[in-house]
Length: 202
Image 1 (cartoon, helix red, strand yellow):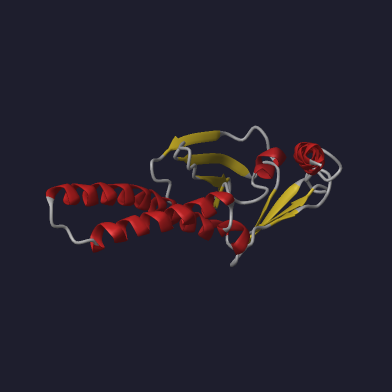
Image 2 (image 1 turned 90 degrees about the horizontal axis):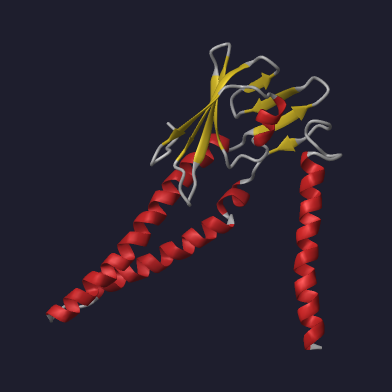
């Protein structure tokens, strides 16, 4: 029985990985490719804020708040105890600051893709972006350049600024589903890369 469970677990994970790979291939270069069929991309609030990295951040934030509360609430009477609470404070404040840094950027990037819909139109080789207050249709020759701004860190935040030849521009976080389709549709667009320690979308 134990051997069967181990076998089912190992091959179950492998089978799931292969299945996800097949779906990804179908949706990118296969029969369901955005270059072949109409695809609509959008992200809901719960999908955005309940990503694995967000859940880890919320957990770490809770732990750091408990450490800070313990450091502040305990009565200090001896130097050794004081040093212990100072150490506890340091262990609490560092992850707390990192979580705040992450959440500020996460909320800021969410604003750039909230209620944004990206729709492909293979027949006309065009893309339409629906923003809350307007829409933009992009065809060949409409994009002038693209600027990719990121912090190049493990907790990566990146946003892309698209400049159109008519003077318009729009900004999307790279957390927007289907964002890679824009450059797949329109190749040979000049791309500039910039590094910012705090890539806040203004």
